Image (cartoon, rainbow, N blue to C red; front, top):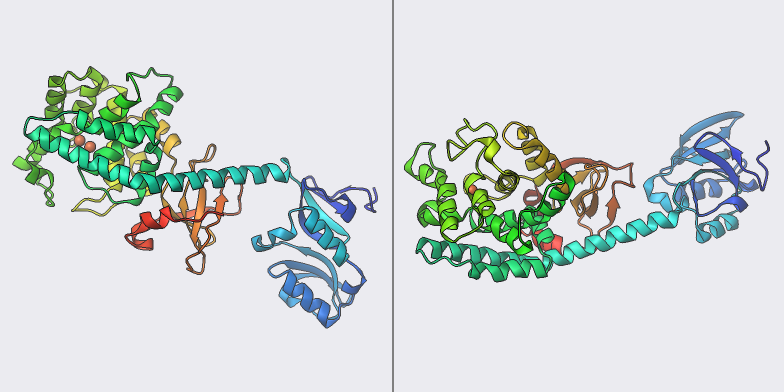
Length: 457
Ligand SMILES: [Fe+2]
Ligand SMILES: [Fe+2]
């Protein structure tokens, strides 16, 4: 088979060699292999031009009768160019075939290319990217709008507990905030805020747990083919907001104490009574059994003999799915949140930690579903990529949980960017997440403001 103009030659199973006239938008160029006469025994100006315009590539050239491969910067006067290959990502515009590139290649006289045929037309990939950018912009906007919604809801939880302490608790106080979260679809944003803002141990904790529960529950029961026990969305949020309602029977100075109590201390026993108190209070308010159970059983571990499993004398088999799920969300939020006696964990580190306890302390099936919905790198997590740049996670990937979409905020040289490129790691296979990073240490205390002001491109 010839590889002259108008024919395509199979070079290997993935790549084909084509002439300029055969380039289409369904191709991505892998290397340039046909050049006009001036690239034969090049003069100095031509070799400098190649070095400048193809920075970072590798060259195959003929030098003194030998065929050699070397980095472009080693190109010499007198070399005959045979191939330009191994393009870095920064030269992507010279690879993705479109009308502009074809015209440019024509004007330069390049004649032959090795190409990869992309399965999906390039515009479908572009469409997917546009979609991801829009979703990221929506998340950022919702985070911006939900910061206040979350703060107000935390105050409402605090006031509910204060009133509960005086025997005057009324869920009406909190229902308007529940409705606010539902109307503004803030729950998803609050799960990201939980990663970005260090919450306290009691009030914002309840709001974050509630928001995460609402986001996860519906999908989880669909995936597990289990029936929804709740009457409506309002009840889903309210029940999870109230899981620690028993804490309203714990004196405020113990509840808000910055000291970590000894295991057998009176204070610790009081704290550990909060599930029983909660069940009593909710029963007195005529709440349905599943809401009472969520408050009663959310600290029960699979191994009920553990000191961290309370109250005693409850069998794991009697703990319903809703309480097992809230237990997982409770520990996740407790790790990610700030406590006076510990700093907050990066969300991916919290996910890894609980992953090791799933099947031992926490329900394995529910955990696996939870992780599919939240991702290994929950939204709002800060990560470092394999090229050294730093980014925020903005999506939960559908297939590979370790490859979400991320928005780059700081480049590999440590410079803060003004415009923030979205990278879909499910598409950009050359990049990986190399590690999670502590967003507060890396970006400072105003990390949520930084996230809320991202300009995604
Ligand atoms: Fe609790
Ligand atoms: Fe809790």
